[in-house]
Image 1 (tube, each protein chain N blue to C red):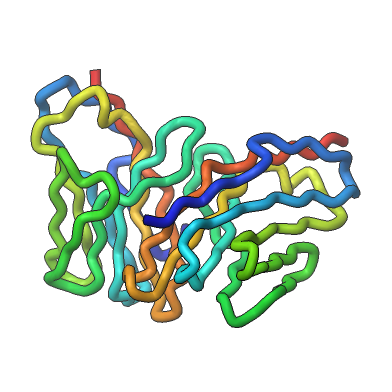
Image 2 (cartoon, chains in turn blue, cyan; image 1 turned 90 degrees about the horizontal axis):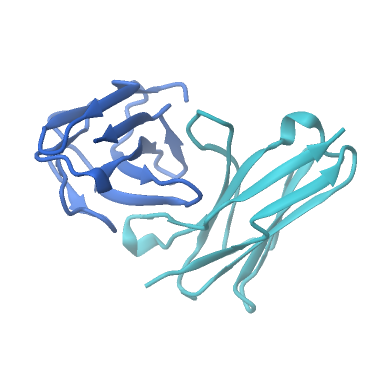
Length: 111
Length: 113
């Protein structure tokens, strides 16, 4: 997971609260991604950013917003958290040859 | 859209034996197929990948094979060791989707001592 950091590592929210998950990279890659992983399942893409200033929806964008303020940082925001958003969230970056590298994850529980 | 199926969901092998995990994909335009290893409490780690212009790729004890006609690809781990115990994911993507990965559901590999 070197090169990709995520904060916080753990978070508990109440239904309706908001929060922002932060992701930063030091590998100077253009592409960044946000995934969620639910128990016993593969990862599902929430949003991605092919370059600074651009973002696109993935497979499960509803309930989330993202910001790519600069090349290093890509944040994921939950405006009004719901129990269905309880999950582990991973940020990833991709090299120019498209290999993706993942951060350590944020474990979010919404009660 | 693309769909990736992965089998088996759990695989238990004796230490030293080989393990094989198989994935099938539905989109014939997919051209990039990575494999990831995920240890408990950690993010997925890329262990090997293959592109559609290649049929097989090896890296020490790990190999991946691709059959484009049948639309399936497999991960082979030889001489398994305790540290190979983890969840393994396959994925598929295509160049015109910004290489968005579509993931299999994962295989829990258990190495018995």
